[in-house]
Image (cartoon, rainbow, N blue to C red; front, side, top):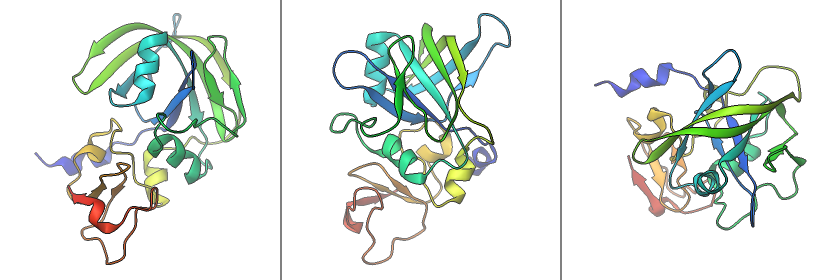
Length: 207
């Protein structure tokens, strides 16, 4: 099987946020899709079980999804893609509001947001697939949406726990064992440091 075939598929990038007791949780996903065109409006969402956001969705049964604009800064994607909700409140200091379910959504660099209620689950092993009904929808901005290709062409590398196949098993590259960042390089130069957590070259493993 030629895994490079999966590189021909592009995906949008979204922030999923979940409120509830304690600290809010959120992560970047590339797996949100509208699956019905009429009422009830439904979406599918796949989340890695290792994420704190997965635990929050399981506990609450709802989530907010934000469509990121193409001009969203790389730092925002890195924050929700690489920082762990176990140690940092990703929403702190950002322009954030809560939807009717009490879930947080980021307003800056956003085109639209949806408040969703989970109606079905399908266990996929390391991932959970949710079917959720949109109970709120709001336009937040204008312009094109951010995609995985946009982000990668801007120098970013998709988080290792993302659901896009090519980011899980690349044909070449190195993964940071500290934060999960994937460097899409054949070899790492001497003195190389992770751009996210600043870990040294010896903390990377070859894919």
